[in-house]
Amino acid sequence: MEAYVAAQGGNFSQLDKSVMLVRAWSILRPLKLKDLEPSVESAMMTLAESTLKADASAPGTVLPILRCLLEGRLKEKGQANRADIPAEAIDYLFSALDRYKADHLSMQLAYMARDCLNDKQLIDVALRKAASNLLEAAEQAIEGHAKAHWLQQAAKFARKFHLDDIQRECVRKLQAIDPSTFQWMTIRAASTVRPSDIESYLRVFDQPELVDALDRFFDTPSPTGSRKENEKIAKNVIDNSLTAKFLGTATYGAHGLPQKSYGTDSEKLQHEINGVESVALGIQGEILSAALDRMADAHVIPPTGDLAAWLVERYGSDPGLCTSLAESLLLYWGRDYLSCIQLAMPRVEASVRSILLLLDEPIYRVEEDKSLGQFPGLGTMLPLLDKHGFDPDWSSFIRALLLTPGRNLRNLGAHGFLQDVDKQTAALVIRALSVVALLAPEETSKKACDTRQIRDSLPFPTGRTRITFFDRALIAFSSRLNSILSARLGKPSRKGRN
Image (tube, rainbow, N blue to C red):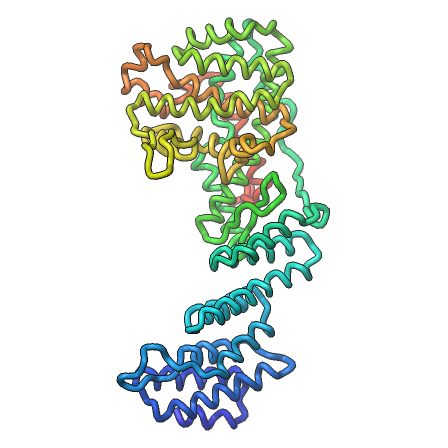
């Protein structure tokens, strides 16, 4: 240890000197060598002071030394429980907070203050100074994303340490960011889907009767495709992208504010899966809406009651849900897409709840303290339906469309963020409602009395048990769709492999 102290006068870099002093400190502390402590402490003080006063002040030199000094001096036997912290060390802490304003450095210094200082007032000053550093960085940022990053970091920090006034200020500033300062970039790729492919797909809906065309519509596969295949594509994107491996990702909601960040491997994988599903939803939304438009052009649209009665008779499903499905279809054909999804989305949740109740699943949340008794939301109920064997492809589709981290239409609609809705989105919501509403039997029916029959239908929600000509057409189209996803998301095509 004496050699480490003596080396401070040698021709070593500041960082090397810091490492040697921290090493000396780590030796004397467990051995309680109090007689050597003053010389090591003095050398640390000298190095910290000179570094903080230098024009180019390296945080890697100062912060490790500060951490040691703030732990306090060794105590004599019978001494008070609280360690004696050198007053100069506290001064250096605040000098460092003034000097090092990067988010990770400010936070690290704030944590030192919280963990080591005995004075609550000093701790509060240190925490507020760290939060102010983040706010100062936000004020200096010009580009919207950078400003949002700093404000979000400051708000999280302030909330963690109960600095309520600073948190409110951060949120106000975050909400007030000018949307025009966000430098968004849109990346587009040419589609390889040929018009003939789309036409061959849509021909299956050319039926002599509207109900026959609807029967084919309700038999279409999940718009997001195979969950397993999507995971393979997403993993391939991450494996072949250095950016995806090492950098985090943040998403912004319909409100234009930061919504979710993805940093861990599992979060990054889920984000890439969301990207694959989003591309699929965009394409399939076009196809499903074109199919519904084709039906309206070719057939006379019946009244709601007649269409609902056919759905009940054809599928043996709950009359209330069938009526909602019929009304949603008529709103779509009337081009009132916003009203269409406002009606259909809550009924998706009602359908899932109805199925779970018929399966005797205990889902009701009883009253507890100040919490009212109530049924849980769709995000809680859907995993319970998965537990009973619901097709994962369809479960993924409903999540991707209605819940987070997908499009989150359910919450956006509930909180008034959906104003303009296109027909593609309306067609997808109708498809989501149809797959669960037609599974939910009328409670008085024989099917509802047989829970095994309900459970057996969950893995095959469209009821298809054999490969038909229609299936083969869908498989052919899905194959071409996968090639689009691969091209857009970086997966090498099979033709390019040896």
